[in-house]
Amino acid sequence: MKAVAEAPGKAIITGEHFVVHGAWSLAAALQMKVRVEATDSEKLTIDSDRFAAGTPGLKPVRDFVQSLLSEFSWSQRMRLSIKSDLPHGAGLGSSAATMVAVVAAVSRLRGHPFTVEETISRSMVGETDVHGKASGVDPTVCAMGGVVLFRRGSKPRRVVPQHGLSLLVAFTGKSRSTKGQIAKVVAVRNASQGFFDGLAGSISGVSKTAAEELRTGDLIGLGRLLAFNHALLATLGVSSRELDALVEELTSMGCYGAKLTGAGGGGSVVAVAPEGKEKRIISRLKARGIEAYQSHVPAGGVKSWVE
Ligand code: PMV
Image (cartoon, rainbow, N blue to C red; front, side, top):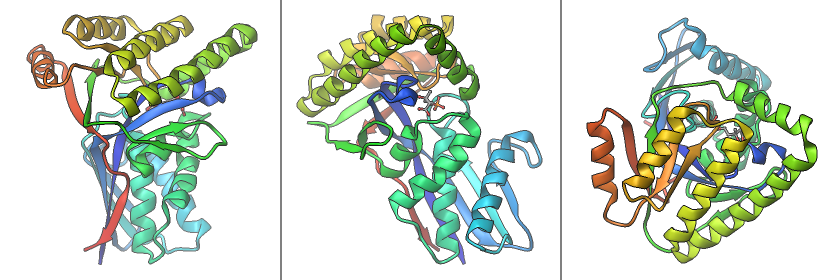
């Protein structure tokens, strides 16, 4: 028997970093996804199209699977095969989508498929291990799909965009560690708590307004909020020369707004473009050697089945 699970990547539209400290964030599932196939085997084996066997990249997944299996007293004799459309360390949720798909495939193979809520809470364990201090927004969106307004400790709210929205995502080509970026922001917060709390309050307002603009289809207003959010993240020191250049380039190509997405310091930019112009912008970026994607929103959440 083979259990298969697929989970989408994500783009944070507004509120990354601040969400770790209790602010509201808005995030969307992407069409690019991670697929995990689980089969019974002699011993626990994990292979991935992104990391060679035995390399450190697979260690967090291996540790996570081992602790999940022992927690439920499930047999460790299993082979997991991971395939990902998502670049690693690019701020597009590759680690969260992997954890979510692993939880779904493993629980399906062992005959106890988890609910979406259970999948989120189990995946959080692996996500915290990778990120150090994680808000939970990534596994929540990768499991739920669609667009989600999220705050730590509150029930996630689903947001339904008024009409077919596409997000543009472009990768700087530079991967980085989320953990290090989170630590940078914690240092800013510790140094100037009042300043940080003011920015966090403002970002909660930005996320709620952005959700409203998605509902009403006001892409110009949404673009303005992306630009503002990018400036705040740059103030925290989590942008980079490459990210700032990509934001400027997308804006000069006609996007309504663009910002870094995820932890920053490298990784990717998310943008909204006028309807009908997306494909042209993507091909211009690709012609310049930049990895870029158009993702239709809403994309589905985690799913699993037996083959
Ligand atoms: O870059 P990513 O995909 O690891 O996104 C991290 C988002 C943060 O807000 C920086 C951390 C979190 O857990 O919310």
